[in-house]
Image (cartoon, rainbow, N blue to C red; front, top):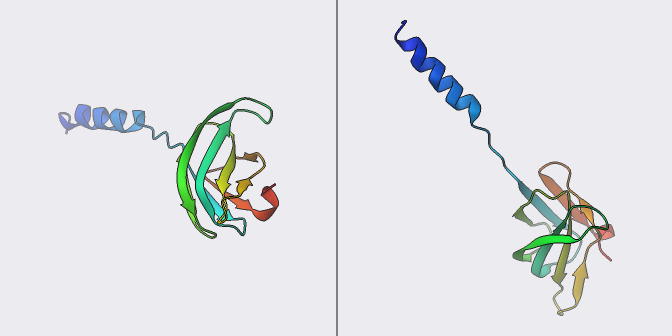
Length: 106
């Protein structure tokens, strides 16, 4: 048993030092419009500069897309079925999932 103790301590130390940094955010489209050629843009603050974007393609109403970010704010830029622009307001990320509603669109 005394020989196993250092091994158990080492394994516990290894497991406790591993932390999963999961920055994935699930975005659900409940806006009432299908999004085509969708880009999710990120920013640090309401008026701050954009820090990048992720292309997620088509997101149908009721569907989700998953993006990776450490930024606290995003907005949707996409096209509708006629090629017109769809753009959301800035949306704050709280937790690991966010819903975009019709009231979030311009």
